[in-house]
Image 1 (cartoon, rainbow, N blue to C red):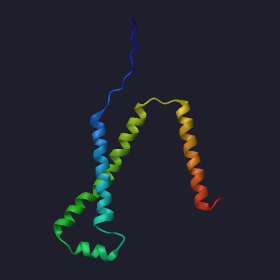
Image 2 (image 1 turned 120 degrees about the vertical axis):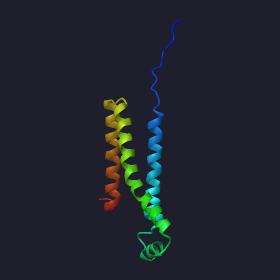
Image 3 (image 1 turned 120 degrees about the horizontal axis):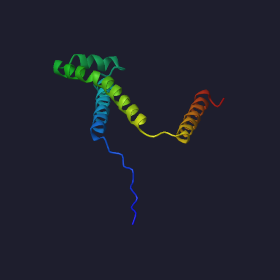
Length: 113
């Protein structure tokens, strides 16, 4: 009796956890920039600046997290893409999808022509 052996790729849970952590850093960076400081509204920004120094320090600690998180996330995503198998069929499918959405965005932004 012959048994078929399936090829099994091992999960890299430690890298997946690091990627999830980087997503969390990105969310905190957005929270700091758009939620706490209210950068777009000068009146709310002045209200934040007149508040507690502890809150301001906490926010300044969150700010670089977004940039660091983006770097980690894209590096890990690139690693996972490079370690996977690629074929010409996958590449053509990706290029057609990108081309379709580029043309769609062009048509929407230019009003159809």
